Image 1 (cartoon, one colour):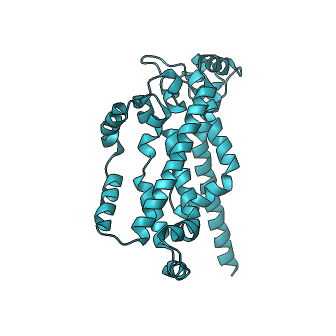
Image 2: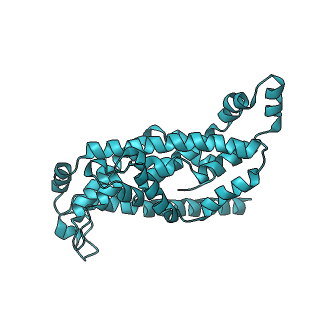
Image 3: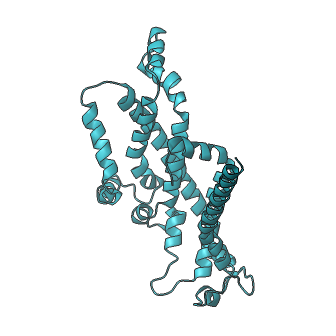
Length: 279
């Protein structure tokens, strides 16, 4: 018995040691960004691997980026992008997922196969058609242009469909006996039961929207319509980059997501655990 308990303790210690090591490894890039933001350009570009901490903690980089970049405008554009993409994705995916998961209509399997094909195809293939559509509508350099690719999401449709398919049929039968039509059954009974899947989809959509770089750089070239990701990308020069200023701007850009995570930490963890996905 003692040998079994000893083995369990050893296994537990090893697992915790591995988890701590992995956690520290994941934190290294973030810590390196913070340290680089307070370094000089010489220290940031030093080849010496032992130059980890700055000799003098400088705030010049933060002052420079605050003077040269309008972060309030960048925050506003980024938060509007995230809000409208999450709103549109959850609304459309919830209705489409219910239709594919619970309703029976002609051509359902064919239509859902098109959704699956869209998930398999690289997103870059749709850039030119989407750009032409936005350009023909005269909506370049607008918030609508940023939100447009995320109005309908194939991944969200698939995720919500799986959520609806996991619900028992007795719920719909009971609602039908009580006189509910399809819309009432969906709105008052089925949709509230897939709240965890909606939260997971909202989390994924928010993170993907925040990290999106290629589409905002293509569709919005006006400096007043830039988001945080595209503004940071424009800081990199062709031949040289001021890494302390770039890291300082990156650190400031992380503030909205840190605040959102701090507020919705419980929902964030529950959504990821329920969906079985990873970022």
